[in-house]
Amino acid sequence: MSTSKTPVLPVIMAGGSGTRLWPLSRAGYPKQFLVLSGNESLFQLAARRLAALAAPDLELAPPCIVGNDEHRFLVLDQLRETRQEPGSVLLEPLGRNTAPALTLAALAALEGGQDPVLVVTPADQTVTDGAAFTAALQQAVRIAAEGAITILGITPDRPETGYGYIRTTADTGGLAVAQFVEKPDLATAEKYLAEGGYYWNSGMFVLRASVWMTALERFRPDIAEATRAAWAARKTDGKFVRPGKAEFAAVPSESVDYAVMERCPGTDIPLRMVALDAGWNDLGAWEAVWQVAEKDEAGNAFVGDALIADSQNTLVHATSRLVGVVGLKDIVVVETADAVLVSDRARSQEVKQIVNRLGAEQRGEQSLHRKVHRPWGWYDSIDNGPRHQVKRIMVKPGASLSLQMHHHRAEHWIVVSGTAEIVNGDKTILLTENQSTYIPLGQTHRLANPGKVPLEIIEVQSGSYLGEDDIVRFEDTYGRA
Image (cartoon, rainbow, N blue to C red; front, side, top):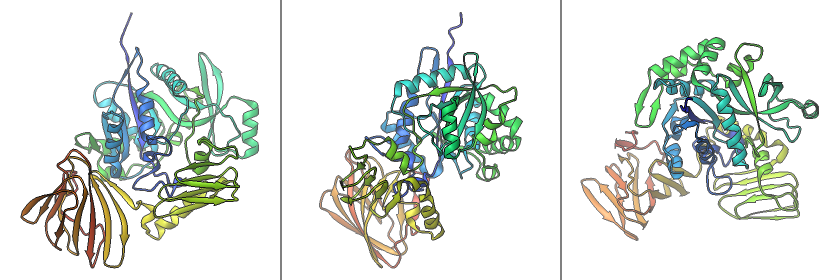
């Protein structure tokens, strides 16, 4: 009797932009990296759920992350906070939707000579019943190990019009997928719920790497060929794997559903579904955040410093100051340090209209928060004027900024806490709490934290131009020079 284990590779799709959760989600810090409740981000929660898949018959590999090059250090930092290391981080030079992303993961998985079962999940979903999630996913892995493409379908509890549906038929040992159905209107969704046999499409797929490549080459050989070319031109930097940029730009943009899944019913490619009833939500908009939040007796939910009076079914998310609301019903209020959103809860999907306008007007609120995360720590722009800017800067223990200079600004640094090692021209000095230094315009300089606790400083910039692009880097730990 064979005791060999089925190799399993978790694949976390972490490349989304999360525009419908603006202003909390920004292009530079999208929703999958946000902590919406508790103390872990959606990405960290997804990684933890997949780590729980281990079983006596399953050989679980470290996760493969597919994400945006801009977020590569966020991925590593957040995984390490959960005491996990990725097997690899595949960095898309630009977004090409989920089918090319999954193809990169499949090609990476097949490199080692194995053909693992890929457990593919978005990074931005929530689940309240971890045990039910693990059991359903393990069942899906065992079905997929036999050669079927297996989908996780969500048992619907309401006539939802915001999700695509899967129509199933009974099959030996489970459910076969008969049809994919687009997002329905309310009457159609109510009909699906009454008839039974319909499930929400979760966007989670379980299948062998070779099965995906075979199906893709049949239905979308153009995507398969172009992604193979980008993979062949890849460059590797530690955990980071970068497909060829020019080659990846030529890959057609398409979703997993449209490229392959919806074409499988009626063919010889077995497409199965495992029902998932685990308190799942994809948090696609603020309405979904309200759905999963804890609420008071009037249906109100809040995060942060919020006072709610005479209101019903309202969500208030405060991040930097007190927010008070009176007499609201079915409203979303989201406050950040530099933007406030007020929306009808039922129309919260439409916040992307605001994001599109911000992008068209090239406003910074579309892409960055006032507090900007960097691989070495973060900075928070707390004040600015025509010729000055004030920042709080935190540098992680052992981290350093690049060796750099500025053409248009000088800087004053005051240490608030921790120890700073500062290169200032041809001098290197150590400063501690309440000590300061001055960096003249044009001077080569570097800030580092040699200590074991976070370093925090106040930086006062002054000059004719204070943009982030006025940085000339000479050396950089993070490959940005």
